Image 1 (cartoon, rainbow, N blue to C red):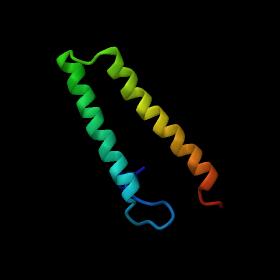
Image 2: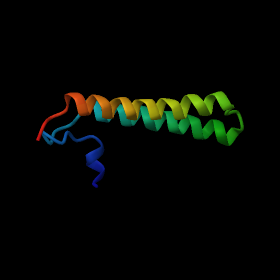
Image 3: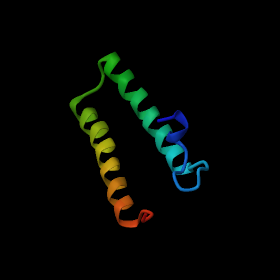
Image 4: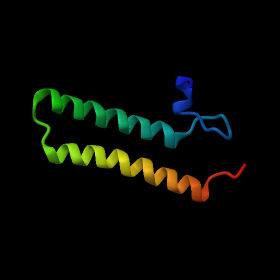
Length: 72
């Protein structure tokens, strides 16, 4: 895997704005979560919200891709 695969559309090979902004959101949430954990201010609710958000987004993205994705 190349780093460009994080923002490149598999079909067109061009820039995927959806992938770009998703990865920026993941990065900023992860940095904020790591900083809160480092500072000792991350509560159990923050853990559940952070991990739940990542999990639900990943699962929903897969389901939508399976239903509406490009057929080979």
